[in-house]
Image (cartoon, rainbow, N blue to C red; front, side):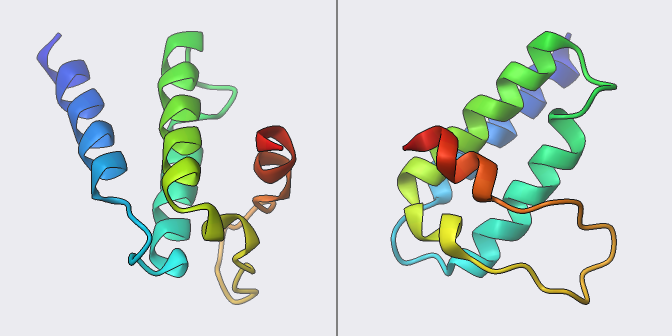
Length: 89
């Protein structure tokens, strides 16, 4: 319904807002949020596809985010961007 369209639009705006002058550390936080909310086993295949497409588009626009190191003090972090980077090569 309407909520799904809103989420898709917000993800599209997020992708459009990314460019080479946005600090990769800021983009990294957005990627983690998308991954935690759209790319998990509790999501449907369609939700995961939307999340993966958003992450790929953001990484294409700000490739430097793929070399951003995680902050070890960041609670709840599970993994790194290395698998995404490998998938994009």
